[in-house]
Length: 472
Image 1: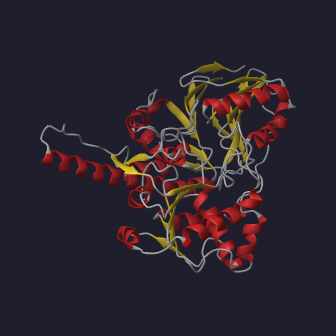
Image 2: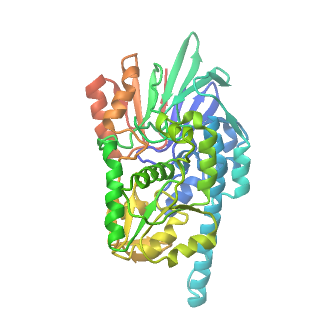
Image 3: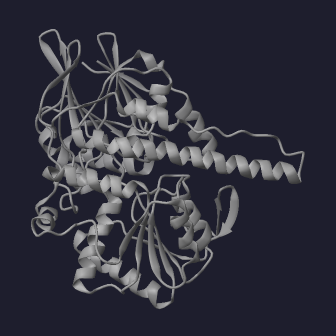
């Protein structure tokens, strides 16, 4: 067995790892890389291998940085199966379609802007922006899904099987074990996917993997400890109260799947408890209603607290002050609202979608607040906002950042250092030979590697993009 790291190697986005067994190649995830526009386009458009050479894809979960480049893979000739849980497959149908639509709309917008510039200045070089993939490509990718239950060994190729457990990161997310036969001795490779946190709203807690020889593990928050989840509702209440008091809007960049539902559920609880101002809340995402339907379809994956809403006839993802926005005209109308309100919109790292329009229209007003509720990868617009840079580019134009920037990290779907160490303990005590750290930036990875080595005396490797290792 060989493994080559092509994505999320010393970075957080674009998860993609190639596993080779007996002359067959498999992918663990096929995520979209997010970052500087030119670099992202290059990485996402061109695979370092022929797409048709891949025998199967194993998808840990539906987030775009793990699934978002599947349509490009298909566009380039891939026709094999995509194995995932049923919930992940169902989520990817609207998510990949939405991703394709956003890319098509953004390309159209940028082309209009270039054309306007050329009308004013003929020296401007013509530039035609094309979407990474289309809705048709996304639809073709979704036809290749093979829903596979957790805890069920599945043969995916000659001498190779896999099984999965609940990763507790988002609805349907998994950690996996690949088992390859090598003579009489099997080789077992664990892949964490993204490990969640115990106690997160909606979803069940992460499960441990069985014993493995090698482990590929995420390290997003490998250098820090999260604050206790108990304080998150009060933070939300405080931010809403002070922003509403000065007549401002709360703009919330949010992942459309998972994070948005968590925020809505917490706001529902706060509204029922009378702890937040009576202001309108908008989820401006055409994806939201479709995703909520998928969540309801897979209520078997809910934790007890969320299941209790349904048992009492309540919609956990809806309350009186909340309105879901589908149509473009309704989204544009939000720009004309006067007075306090909250707008929750995708994408979570501010790299595309309707959130860019809301930021463009609101970050220059000091009465407003930009509320960041998740990790922001290096070089994304979200990271620049978190860093409170005085000026940021949106659609290629500079805008002054005068709005308050607030952060709530407690909702992170990623385990922190202590939680990752605890999650891997059963494997560390059962013959684990080596850990490969992925899905993290170097500072976080180095800190986690040190703690793993000190805690378990296990070899830790931080692979670079393109590094290959033989596992035996």
